[in-house]
Length: 520
Image (tube, rainbow, N blue to C red; front, side, top):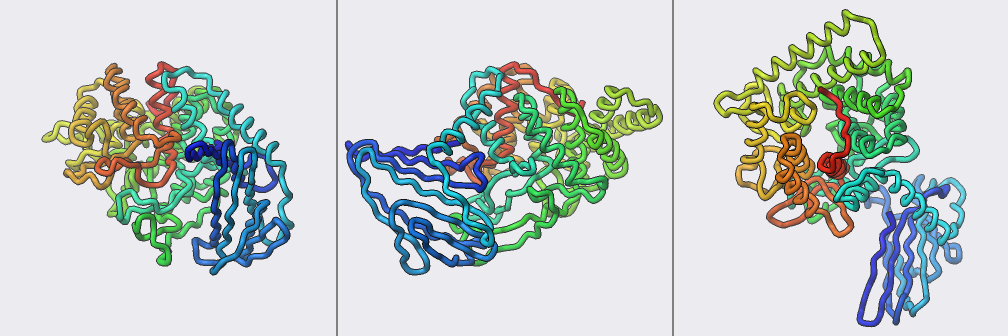
């Protein structure tokens, strides 16, 4: 997680190094410029703004230290070259570097009412940071033909963990558009319980247990003992309030508007999230992670909540903002959650036979209902909701959680239909696009299709689909949420945890590594 950029101009070569320190009392962003050969001239411009660009800071100077305060926030900048203030508090500097010379800028954040953060030893900070990430990466012991891509994705998932609490954000950005100039611009800087369970599954299968335990404990503190009040996403400190609002003073990326802060999806009620929590806890136990007493209590309260709510309408996996529907995917995950609870209860030797029998009967009822009401006879495949006619890539999860066997004729028909109608050039769309490719293919769904093909024994097809996904990564191996085929570029918030965890899962499956699974 140290970025090196080399500038070459004939015989003149300069290296720029950027990294965020590990282990310092305050977060410090380091930018170091070193001339390797010849001479280059650099210009630096810094226009720091707070409250999403609305507030200009109060600037004060102390020798080589510049302090920028705005309300409770402070950024302290230290550098050896003079920064001159131009209009509107824009700081600029121009300097030459000859071979062997180095200039280092540090940016530290803390509260404006606290003491200034201490200076750091730059070289020691870089060694400590490099050692931390390298040691963490070496814990991945699985062998795969795509080792570099998998390690990079694992590092991204680790970097998306908020260290003080263990919460995992979906992406570190807001309002990067899913379509060019469009309105699908969402704030992803929160912990979605659903996405986090997927991330935990990928990390556990890759051998990383500490992150799973810390997230589990954060989750238990966050949802407390009342699942009926549970939200589908939270702030990284575990708080619940995140009212969505628009920032009209910001243009938006490539003029895509609106720019949104917060996410109203937090108020949606989604049954599948309960199932996903149970399957994740089950997977952790399969991996040898001992459940805490709080985790066991949560399993019981979650499955009781699932008994009461499994038939509720909802917004589906893609968090539609339209009228709630009887979507297929939440029903499948309700079934998977009950199956996971039953497996955990049997492992612990629980003896409440009446409860276990009741849950087995409920799982059978859900399975029968979905098999009948989500099957479209005329189209010959499963559809996205009861009585519907539309395909949805979330149906791929029916095979992946074991709701049906991969080569069951109904499963095969649905997978084939998704590949035929929702995919193009190895990329999969979430929903029918009607020839309008503006919405972009969903990166994780392409991995899901590869997973299904692998489960069906079609390894060659699965590898081809997976390597198509690998080809979408940028120069440092990062993926966003969607890919715009017409423009040939990644779109949406970036980097996206869901895309990277799907990459890890698919690579492990194709490499023959043992994959634990919640659900059936």
